Image 1 (tube, rainbow, N blue to C red):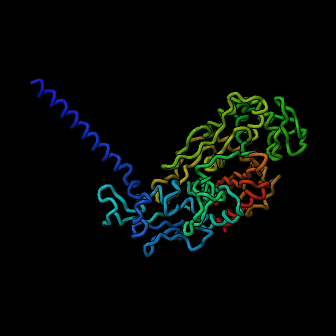
Image 2: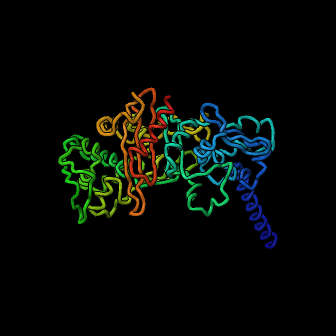
Image 3: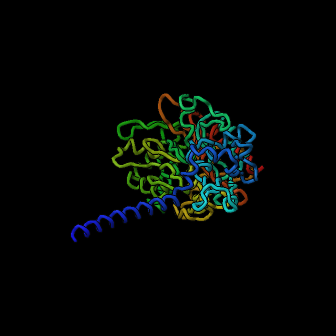
Amino acid sequence: MKTVGLRSIVLYILLFAFLGGVGWLVLNLFIRGSQWAAQPYNAHIYVDGSLGDIEDRDGNVLAHTENGQRTYSESETTRRALLHTVGDTKGFISTSIQYTLQDKLTGYNPIFGLNRTVFSDLGSTVKLTLDSGACTAAYNAMEGHNGGAIFYNYKTGDILCKVSAPGYDPMNVPENIDSDPEYKGAYLDNTLSGAFTPGSTFKLVTSLAAMEKWPDTWTELYYDCYESEEIGGSNITCLGYHGEQDMQTALGNSCNLYFAKLANDIGAEDLQKTAEKLGFNKSLDFSSIEIAESECKLSGANPNQLGWAGVGQHTVLVNPYHMMTVMGAIANGGTYVQPRLTEDGGLFGGGSATGGSLMTAAQANNLKAMMRDTVSGYYGDWLFPEGLNVCAKTGTGEVSETQEPNCWMVGFCDNDNYPIAFAVLVEESNNSLGAAGGVVSAVLKELIY
């Protein structure tokens, strides 16, 4: 009897193990079945006509299967501009539509798999919120530099332009792409998966931290700038001799010494706390894609390091997608609208204020006023289409002594007809207003004209 009882226990253990394994397999089939089915080694997905079209917001076809081949836009420039959004045939770009929305494009469902049925033939086309003309304009304006540009409607959440470089032509993939340094990072979408030294764009964060710490007296904060000054045992330098300034004047002058001194008076803990309220030091999600973290970790920073952090140097890093949403929050009275990339919502849904409040309405309006003054009083409205009331801040992020800096422009249009927020990064340039500002100008002209 003991033997029979022992055998029964063993059989029950095996039965539970079997049922558990089947349950695990079924669960993963529903969760990951589309990804398994649409891996690049299942080449027939791309060549038997079962991969649906991808279109931009105006119905322009960006990817299509024809005569057994996956084809892309007729324009090579457009193909390159949209590579990281649309994707490649081999599935190397894991943040692209062709990779992340495989189930919709293939018509996959967990019951019939990839077999063609009336159910799988429904709705295999993916329509994007992007304007392909704006993406092409951004790519051309980057003039061969690496970087990223991302624009969205901060009222609806529609992403209007998303471009990353370096890249390649998906219809003519270079044979030496994995060995040629020119293509290093070509599979990475800088707008979603990159983090870069922000330079003076971070002065907006430092400004907000001052408003948090001194809500009633921040406008009375004055500091002197004599071009170079020792702080914490080493010099912090500025591009000019600005004398005594308040915050708004210092933002227009992009004065390093003002914001370095301000950061030290705010303190490392409070500056980091404000940055974290804006989403720094945490992983943001964009559908199934994990956005690269923007970083502001100031524990243990000495006064010199804290001063440089206050002007967007030291160890501070910023992701373009994240910075775009921060600009959307400033434009929207403190609350940003969740971005979306597909018009039907789908896995890239958005269009609602799910991002939550990043700052008070009063703080958002203060920043908006300073950014507007920076454009009208220092950069000049001539750079942008007339009437958009662009509010912006440039930044020059020093990378190393052997490389040209990262050039940034972040901001938005304070215009109800064109509610557009943006973040643009042009790597290894030396003129933020000309390089990044030139991209912003080109995209805005394409979007409104």
